Amino acid sequence: MENNNIEAYKKIAKLITQINNPKNFKKARLALDRISHNKKPVFKFIYTKKQNLKNEKNPEIVIAELPFLDILHDFFIDNLHKISPKNQCKSKFCECNIKYDEDRLFLLMWQLVFYFYYPEKISNWEDLNSEHLKEALSYDNESIEDYKFILQQQIKHSFSKIKNDFPTETLLDKEGLNQCLFKKEHNTEFLEIVWESKSQLYISDYIDQNKYRLIFGLNPKSESFSKFRIDKVRCIRCTTTFYILREAIIEEKRNGVWDTIYSTLSQNNSIKYISKANNLHYKIWEALQELYSTHGLTENQAEVAAKLNFDIPLKHSTLRNTKQQLKKKLGNIEKILQIWDDLEWV
Image 1 (cartoon, one colour):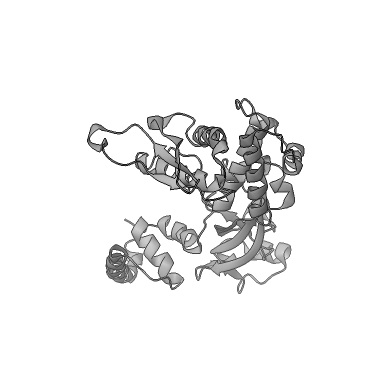
Image 2 (cartoon, one colour):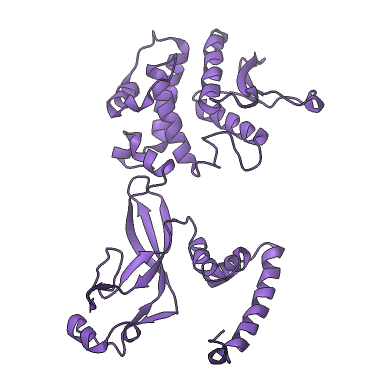
C-alpha cells in the first residue's frame, strides 16, 4: 500500500458509506483520516453526535494489507449498529437483518461487482447476472484506476472465501439468495425427523372403523401416530439448516369418505403432516417452543419446557425461576385433571 493510493482509499470509503448507509442516517460515513507512520491507511467512522458527546473520539481502524474491503465493511456495520435506535438497526447488512457472515459477504461481493461496472451510480442492480460476475473475476488489467483495481481484488477475495459455502448456481446468480435472505422464502428439502411427541393421534377416534378398514386396510384399534413432530430441513439454495414443527392431521376427502393423503415429508402414508406455522427455526428448541406456546404456556414457560426436553441448560436465573413456577403450575393442573369430567360443563 503506497501513498499514491490516497485517492483510491477515499473513493473506497465513499463506496462503503453508500452501500451501508444509503439513507444517510445521522450522516454516518467512513473517511480516510490519515496515512500512518508505517504507510498504512487509517479510516475513521464519523457521524453527527449530540452536544454532550462532542469530545468523544471517533472509532478508527488501521488497514495493514490487501484484501481489506470486507474488514472495512464489517467495521462500518458494527459502528452503525451502535448508533442505531434499539430494535431498529439501520444497516441492512448487520446480523440483525442477515444472520450469517457468509450471506453478508455474498451480498457485499455483488455490491462490489455492481460498483465495478457502474462506479458512479447504482440505478438498477438487478441487471447484473452470472456473466458479469465471471467477467469481473477474470478481469486483469493493471492500467485500470487504482480503486477499481482494488475492487477487482476484493471481488476475487470474497468469491474465494465463500465459494465452498454456496451451490455454484447460487454463487453465480445473486437472485438465488434474494428469495432466502430478504423474502424469507426457502426452497427446503427434508433431511430427517428429529423429535416426535408422546401425544398420539388415534385413527379410531377420527374415522368410522368399517370405512377405515375398507379404505386403509389397517387396524384402527392399534394404529396411532405422534400428533406433532419436528423435521430437520435444509434450503437447497442457501444450504441453511432449519427445524420446523409439524402436526398430524387426518382429513376427510369428500362426502364422508376418508382417504390417504400423502406428504413428501411424511413417513406415514395414512396421515398428512402440515406445518402449524410458516416459521422455520434455526434451533431445535425454538421449534418445540412454538408447540408449547400455542398450547397455553407463556413465552418463558415454553422456552423452559423446550430446553429441558433437549437437556439444554437454563443459563439465566429468570428461566430457572420460571422452571420452579411451571413445576408448581403443572402440579395444580394434574389435580384438576382428576376431576376433569366434573368440569367439562364450564
